[in-house]
Length: 287
Image 1: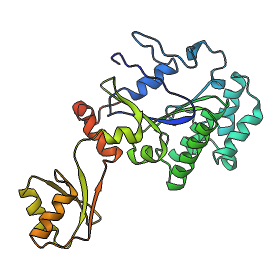
Image 2 (image 1 turned 90 degrees about the vertical axis):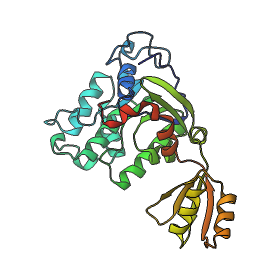
Image 3 (image 1 turned 120 degrees about the horizontal axis):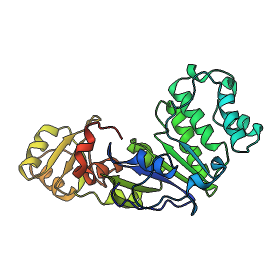
Image 4 (image 1 turned 90 degrees about the horizontal axis):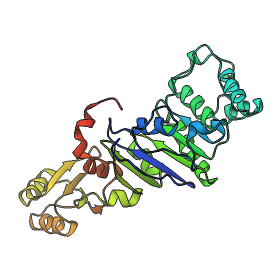
């Protein structure tokens, strides 16, 4: 980390983004007191997490869904955590029901799929009914139904006034789930703003074009300084020229158009552009 400073506010889902190696997991570990910052402080509600005797009542976290003893059952795992944090045993049953694991509560975790382990990790985070929740890559291993469920869960938790911080590399999900973003690179803060505002920071005009004369139009547009990218759905994304100029060139060269739609940058496009200076982290270094 290099002078990293930000505040996560309650009542909204905040996405925590950055290239691989940017320091996302390290930051979350420092929030929980698992790693010690070389300078500065990390507090939750004004206090260090390690100073709270019953931490799960204040902060719930999912950092690594695989970090559970495989010989324990799901209910035994949650039961032990409940006892150590002064939480009633019935709460363990309630959160297992909430995450869809009640039917396998007494099965050993070692036989769980990754998606089931993720659900157990989310149940662990919810166990103390805390006001602050941290999730590191919570969607890994979940099927589409599970992803929809998690998306709705995060929104509900934020709607209850909780602080919800979600670290994820799935840009599409963050665009659909998060309201605010914290983006870091090389351990430094790049941005803290709404999803819409962050996407708007990407440079360049993007226009979606559909035409039966894609090859001919691509050549014309390229000759006029545009960059044309063919998409999987048969459309083309054009940057460097606005929609009006593209239409004029198509008319001039008698190329029919079926669609000509200017659009803003997606979250993924904005993220790739604004974090490109940390490109060395995009090659697969460990976080």
